[in-house]
Length: 211
Ligand code: ATP
Ligand code: MG
Figure 1: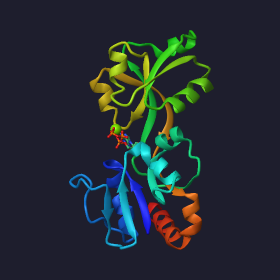
Figure 2: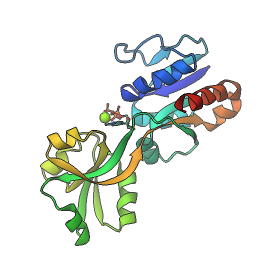
Figure 3: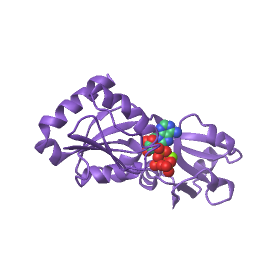
Figure 4: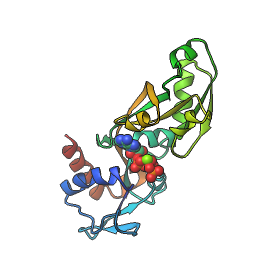
């Protein structure tokens, strides 16, 4: 049995065509089903639905053999015990620093001000500002980061941006790109050895489908 870990939403939606290229079709849609284990047309392949941030954990400890996770999630997780052979080039966005329109970020950085940064991505943010030599106090949030600068919780946020419309709707502007994000295939290293006959063809098909 091969277990594939996916998260609901854009990662599931954008992985469906890749699975299809490998001849794998789930019998149910996670948006309408409450099931967390989805059977597929292949008796020896199943898909489990987990939170995006939990995909690396399931794969690392063998709860799934293979999964799809954003680079944002993988960088935060650290990637121990995970093999990431392939950039699937799906769920693309950018991790950015954003501030209130009326906040002069460049000048705050120039003056060596200590900045309060709210983010879900504490590790990535810490590393980014350390590399820039900017002193920061990091405030861990789990969502709706855009709110933090509006109510004085933070000077800036570190968040994912694709169109920028959420930032705009909240009077924020992106001032710095930290890293370009896309989703990666993650594979359990032990499973790759033990189930190579099943996993390698899947990885090869994905590789061709991504192009
Ligand atoms: P939830 O939104 O339910 O709290 P989440 O934020 O963990 O959960 P998604 O918003 O579906 O889940 O994001 C999953 C992954 O998709 C992220 O880890 C990231 O790699 C990617 N992603 C997030 N936001 C965007 C975006 N605006 N555009 C493109 N890809 C994105
Ligand atoms: Mg989200």
